[in-house]
Image (tube, rainbow, N blue to C red; front, side, top):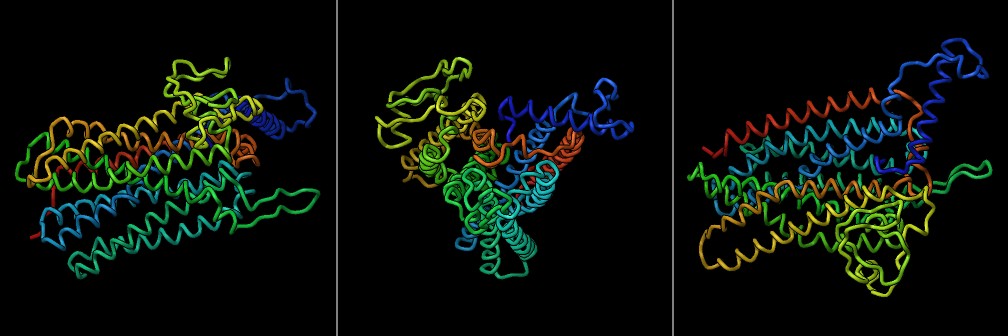
Amino acid sequence: MSAGGDAEGRDEAEAHADANTRQLARQRCGRRDDTPDILVPRLPTYTSLMTSLTAARVQMELSLGFHMLFASVGMALPVMLLMVERRWMRTGDRDALALAKTWSKATAVLFAIGAVSGTALSFELGLLWPRFMEVAGPLIGPAFALEGYAFFVEAIFLGLYLYGWDRLSPRAHWWCGVAVAVSGVASGVLVLSANAWMQDPVGYQPATGGAPAIVDPAAALFNPAWPLMALHSTLSTYQAVGFAAAGIYAWAILRRRHAHRDHYHRLGLTTAMALGVTSAILQPLSGDLLAKRAHHRQPAKLAAMEGHFKTERCAPLRIGGLPDPGAQVTRYALELPCGLSFLATSDPQAEVLGLDRFPRDQWPNVVVTHLAFQVMVGGGVVMLAVAAWYLFERWRRRRIADAPLSRALLIAMVGCAPLGFIALEAGWVVTEAGRQPWVIYGILRTADAVTPVADVTGSLIVFTLLYAALLIIVVMFLRRLAVKGAEYPA
């Protein structure tokens, strides 16, 4: 449901919206259906500013982009919570306990915001994409139902965790945190089953000859694209949150305003980097497996990701560059001979399909998909380099207790703070834009799934205001939490 769809789909949706508007005008004016258009008054609609398809796409992009920020924190921050609380249980470190209490408050607020934005998304699916829900509802319903159970488990144990500091034993309290972390990941993974099915729809045969469609919800739930997408997405949330938290504590260390809290900040940085570094190392491996799968199951997406227009053997890997769909070339790219063939098939002489093998109306938006892919990969490479730098400094100073990190490395960590979230969002642009013009790959086009209602822009404005208000609340709370500082036990 990305804005990166083909121009033909946009024109088709605009024509449908305009036809619906004229029909509505005829009904209101008491005109017959065969009344010439010139005699039918034009009704004021938002379609003069934006078609229904474009407005629906923009709204889903805004909603998903906003929700993913909080969903990723809800999946990753509880893991960091468990790490510092376990340290406090083993060593009695007061800074570890202070970190755990501070992060638990942030987790609670971001969980609540994520619940609101996730609820809004569920309404949008039905309101904006009724044809999609008609086809996919019986197949993705089990995934969303199970996600609902995981959400309630997370909410219950998060409540026990927040209010159980002085009411539960340390061991019982820590295990409540384990339940929060596991159910948070389960929520994200189960939702990914639905998106993975949209990329590789199995268990569905369209209705033919008057016979009803054949659906297999179990096959859809456990679709073959799910495991790799779940792994890659989960690692991306861990990496994004880990590097973001590390950057925040690196900035605090550089400022040196609170020397008495230096150990607190260093412990926060070390914990965050433990999660971020591990994910940064594993992420390229999962990404490589996904790219190999795209070569076999979604070759047009892979071609758009790589800016690969011509089918050829020993296909080059393009770094950077700007695709020119008209000329069917990617300009200004650094090309590594046979690199794409090797990465896609492990054979440098293998043939890789280009976009020339697909009808033009089935191309994704090549420019958007390729640039988003470059941003995602570039961000991942930078974070991997900083992770290697961090490990090298830790190894070199391993014999020095509490050895400080170099100022240059701390500055690099601050620079990486937003990079994980930028790469995460860019990765989802690749996932969604690369699937276009299909909302269900090979089965249902995005232009055919959108609502026939013309005035979608009004809904876009309402939801934009909602997300703006939620963002203001989050910023105010996090700022207050940062100003208040660490909460130490009495």
